[in-house]
Image (tube, rainbow, N blue to C red; front, side, top):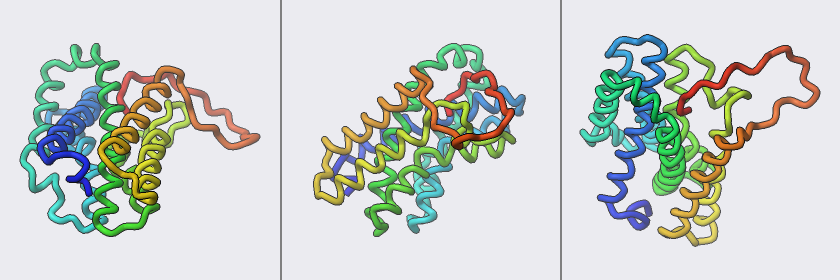
Length: 225
């Protein structure tokens, strides 16, 4: 089904762009944590490939694409070199990085959901793996960097919700036999726009009703989640 939506060359190019941008976010966090060059490379690889690797292992698509396509492995290393030498300049383009990160989020939640369905999972499970594909690398990145995952932080703009919306649109289109290049593109665009709006207007998920907590909001860090 995935190859019916995008040609293999287009799909591969989009994957590499998404992997590169996710790797940039991981490498930048490693620099902020004062990691050495090996740590930067590890965080870049994990952020870029973690979600897809998790999905492929769950659905039995082995060996995972991260280990069969050299471009998938090399692209995070390119991001590592770029950030290692030019991280002040990359930091100054953080807004652009966040925009591309939002695009990668939209793309991966759709392709992850579709691939999971291709391997025989049900609609709900496919949507869940689409979400994991989009956000899994960021969660692993934060865990390795000894931080509370941004996905779970109440003081961070919505990130998982746009991916959930995109994945849900895909499974609904599958359910009603409407999944094609146009509707899948609409799902990507919807997740992308929702993430941009969340960053622009600082949309956040609600916390527990009548909570009793003295936790205070931390200053927002310039990082792609």
